[in-house]
Amino acid sequence: MPEKAFQDYYPEYYSHCYGCGNKNEHGLQVKSYWDGDEAVAHFTPEKHHLAFPGYVYGGLIASIIDCHSTGTAAAASYRREGRTMDTLPPFRFVTASLQVDYLLPTPLGPQLHLRSRVVEIKERKVVVETDLIVEGKKTARGRVVAVQLPDHLAPE
Image 1 (cartoon, one colour):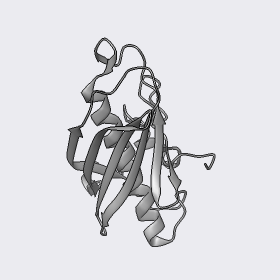
Image 2 (cartoon, rainbow, N blue to C red):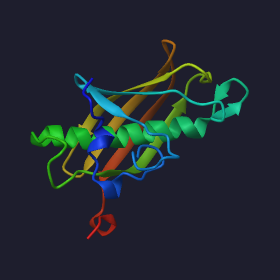
Image 3 (tube, rainbow, N blue to C red):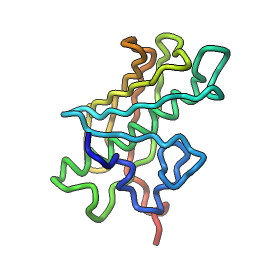
């Protein structure tokens, strides 16, 4: 995998997200990378990320799927334009829709593996589907509709 994650290319203003911002010392620090045509991320939940003893909180699962998917949307947009992620203007996406299906209880302890595919890409919208896999079993799947950050939310 490359040395820098998608999220490490975000300009500082966009690097404070609880889920993926590298400037948020209390955040989850989700890091995403290309693996061919799919994007991957790995996350190891801590003991306080539980729903009940032995299992991961569903809200955490939704959060990591969300942040990994919006990062994937940004990276896919750079790829679509033939640009590297360190070029301006930056692509930054926010979630318009997040759907998560919980297929099996996700055990607390093992590393969580996220694997995403871009299923639709347009100028300002990207749809990403993500599988959450733990110890070879798919425990959740998500679908994120990501839209390019509205101009009024960007720094001046």
